[in-house]
Length: 438
Ligand SMILES: NC(=O)c1ccc[n+]([C@@H]2O[C@H](COP(=O)([O-])OP(=O)(O)OC[C@H]3O[C@@H](n4cnc5c(N)ncnc54)[C@H](O)[C@@H]3O)[C@@H](O)[C@H]2O)c1
Image (cartoon, rainbow, N blue to C red):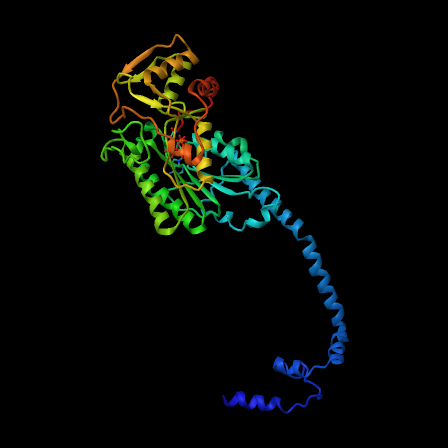
C-alpha cells in the first residue's frame, strides 16, 4: 500500500504540459500517465514520427487483404484436408490405414467445409460395421447425399470390396478398428452397426459377440457423449426372442432364453438397447434405436447361414435347398434399400424409438424356397434337416409406429428384390472372388 501511495504521489509531480517520459526513458511508466497528458497535435506528431503512419497503413492493408481472401483460403484448406483423406483412400486399396487413435481426424474445421447458405449442412458421419452388408449400402447412400463418411470395421464379416468403389473419394475414409477398443473421432452422427448378424458368425466366438455388443456400444455411446453426436443403434428383432405376441410391436418385451446359444447376440443387443437409453436419460445423448428384421440383398456373405443367402447360393450352385425343421416357421424379408431408407429417416427424424424396421410380408420357409426356385432354378430340390436350437417359430414386424412417426414403409417386394440379389450372388459365385466371408 505504501509503495502504491508513493507512486501515485510521484505521478502528481508531472504538470499538464510537461513532456511525458517516453517508453525509452521510463519503460514501465503507467499507461494512464501517458494518455492523460496527450494533446492532439502531440499524438499526430507521435504518429508521424519514425514512420509509424506507414506501419499502420501497411497493417490495415494486410488486415483487409486477409478478410477479402478468407473465403477462398477456407476453400483451399478444405481441399487440402480433402486431399489428405484422398491419400488415405488410395492407400486403402493395398494397405488400409489403421489410425485407431483417431487423432488424424481432429482439426477439420466444421465451418470451412460448408458453403454458407448454399446447400444443406454437409455432415461427417461414422458408420461402424460399414464394410458389412447393411453398412456398405448405408455408406453408398450417405456418400450419394454428399456427406463425409468414415467407416470403422475390423473386417470380421465385412469386406473391403463392399466399399472399395469409394476409395479415392476425398469424402470417404476407412479405418480398420475393433469397436471393443475406444476411438476418438469428430463427427456429427454415429450409425452403430458393428456386430456380426448371422447365427453362423455370432456363434463363432460368442464371448467376442457379447463384448462387441456391450463394450463396442459403450465406446460409441461414450464418443457420442463427448462430441455431442447423434447415435443410432441397429438392434434386432431377436430382442423379441421366440415371441409369444404376433406380429411383434415395439411395446412387446420379448421372450428370450438368457442362457442359450443365441443369447450372446439376443441378450447382447438387449443390453446395447439398455445402454443406449441410459446414455440418453443420464447423459442427454441424442439416440435412435432401430429393431431390424430379416434383411436381404446384394453383398450379403455367401455362406452366412441366413436363409435367403443359403437358398440363393444353393440354387446357383445346383445344390438342394436345405430347410430346417418342417419349413413352416415364418419370416419376413426386407430388401436392403428399404432398410437403409428407414435407418436414415430414423436418424434424421425427431423420435428415439425403438422402431421395428422390416417388411411385414410373411413367408414360410417352404414358400421362400419356392420363390427362390422360380427366380433361380425351377428344377432345384429341397432337403429337410433337423432344426437349430432356439430358432423362433414366427417373426413378423408390426411397423405401424414407423409408418406413422417416420413416414416410412418398405416398397420392394420379395419378387422384386430377389433378382437383384441373385445377379450379385451369381457374379460372385461364378467369379469366385471371395472366400467364405471370413
Ligand atoms: N441383416 C439383417 O438381417 C439384420 C437383422 C437384424 C439386425 N441387424 C443388425 O444390423 C447390423 C449390420 O448387420 P449386417 O447384416 O450388415 O451384418 P454384417 O455381418 O454383414 O456386418 C457387420 C459388420 O460389422 C463388422 N464388425 C463386427 N464386429 C466388429 C467389431 N468388433 N469391430 C468393428 N467392426 C465389427 C463386420 O466386419 C461387418 O463389416 C448388425 O448390428 C446387425 O445386428 C441386421
